[in-house]
Image 1 (cartoon, rainbow, N blue to C red):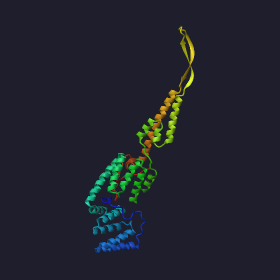
Image 2 (cartoon, rainbow, N blue to C red):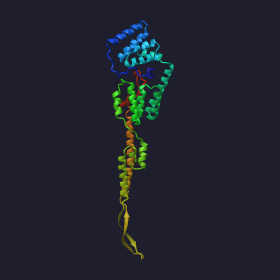
Image 3 (cartoon, rainbow, N blue to C red):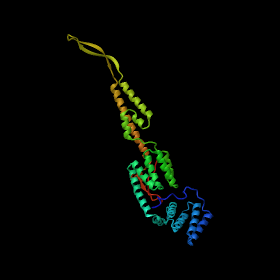
Length: 339
C-alpha cells in the first residue's frame, strides 16, 4: 500500500521462528486491550510491543500495536505496524480501512515522493520490456536511492543485470530482494535462477565483425580461444594447401624459325588445388564468423530467458514484460522468473 514502500522492513523478519502464542502472550494482549480501554495508551503500547516481540507473526497483535502508536501520534511507527499487519494478513476484511489509515498517516511529501517513484518504476518496467537493460538498470538504481527498502526495485534491477550477463551484480540484487521479502513465494525459483544465470553476454555485431576481420577471432572474442585457434589453423592450412606448387611439364605446339610446327614439352609450375582451397578457406572463414555471431546471440537469449515476457506468454495472450501485483506491502510490480 501507499506509504509502506518507504519504510524499513518489519521490526521482526517473517523468517524469524516465532514463539508460540503462549499464555504470556495472551496475557499481554489482554493487558494491552484493558489499558487501551482505560485510555492508558502508553501502557497498552508497551504491552502490545512485548506481545509482538514474542509472537512476531501474529497479525492481530501488529494491528493493536499500530492503533496504540497512532493514539500516541507516533505516525511512522503506526504505519510500520499497519503495513506489517497487511503483510501478515493480506486478505483482512478491514484491508481498505487499514490502507486508508496508512495513507492518512503518511506525510503528503512522502506520498508525493512515492507517486514519483511509481512513475519512475513504470518507466523502468517499460525499458525492461523494450530490452533496454542498461537504461532500466539506471532507472531502478535511481528509485533504489529514494526507496532503499522496496524489494521490487532490486528484483527488477536484478533482471536487467542478469539479462546483460552481469551475474555478480544480479545476484546481489536478488539476495537483497530475498532479504527484504522474507516470505517471498518465489524464493525457490529465484535461487534456481541465480544458480543458472549466464556469466557473460557477447555482442552479436562485435563477434561477427571480429570473425570477418581475422579467422578465429570471433571465437576468441566470445571466450573460446581454443576453438578460435583451431579455426585459424584450419583456414591457414587450407590456404597453405592451395598455395602448394607442383612441378611438371607442359606439352605444346611451337614453330621453328622457318615456320615449321613441332611438338615439345617445357617444365611448368602450377597450384592445382588453389581454387578449391580458396573456396574452402573462404567458406570456413565466413562460417566461423557466422558461428561466433550465433553463439553470441545464444548467450544473450540464455541471459534474457530469466525474464518471462508476460504472465500470459505461454497462452500467447501477451507480450508484456511486467505484471502488476496486488500483494500488499509491495511497490506495485514485478517480473516473473523462469528456467
